[in-house]
Image 1 (cartoon, rainbow, N blue to C red):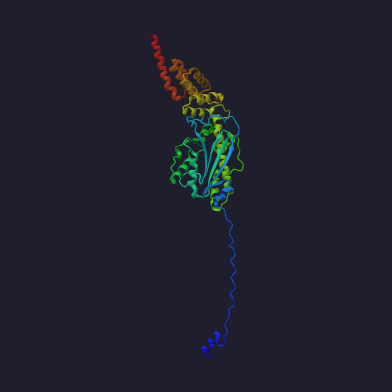
Image 2: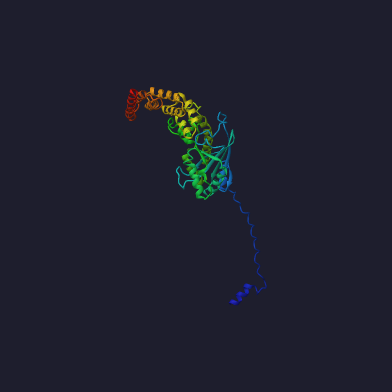
Length: 390
């Protein structure tokens, strides 16, 4: 069979039949695509874990209130401390940060900023801003500035050297116009050191809580571990440690409020706690309030050390109360205090013109003062004797 015949056979021309192809199998309708369960964003996940709310993409905020204990300091003037005594009706802004490092520098940022302010004399509003990522830092800084009013006083613990400079640096890096360091500051660490550094092994905030506020933290995350907690969140979304950082920051803020009020009684002079009352009086004297320095020193009584007694006697002398000053000098002189002997010698030389008595006290001065003072007083006694001959 030639090729042409084969082609005709295939076409069915020889029998008139047609080839019928099987009907096409209808294709199965595609199933609805399985929709994956929508996963919350990292910001939402962090907000849920911290019982907070999303303020912006990458930024959450936790808002709470704290009821202050009823005590005798509720109605006291919060400006009754040497650093801020001249301020008129300030707005108190308590601030504490948790940062990515414990040193300064432009690479260090605050991933959590806690602030608190009074709602009334019994309640404090606490607001804690937390970064879910680096990109929301400008939004967090702007939210912070909304809390800082024109008459605010930033109350912190070592914030003058740490928290506020870090925030000021971050504001400058993001070109946010705000002169945060120019606002009034009350760094309570300096008031604590003034009163207690001679009595306590250290003046860390948790030492203050135990010794001055009677508080003991339970299961507290040390501040040094806060950077690792945030890094763990960034890497894997772990939130357990972040909840502990939030609790630590909250406790810091509450302690600032309680410490501020506790120091008022101490610096007023009526507290029975063992502290350096001489240094507290000097702080008031440096602040231009000699009447408060005098009250602190006088109310200290037997608790005032020799240095404080000398300063109180000097204050009496400046105010013209010579009898009171002399009584304090005599008391110290009887205990062998050479500075009191010098003060008595000057008093009898210049005020009483009793050179012989002045010479007696000069003999009890230290070696540096004794020799020149004795020579001068002998000269005055000789001159007075020659004048009496005339």
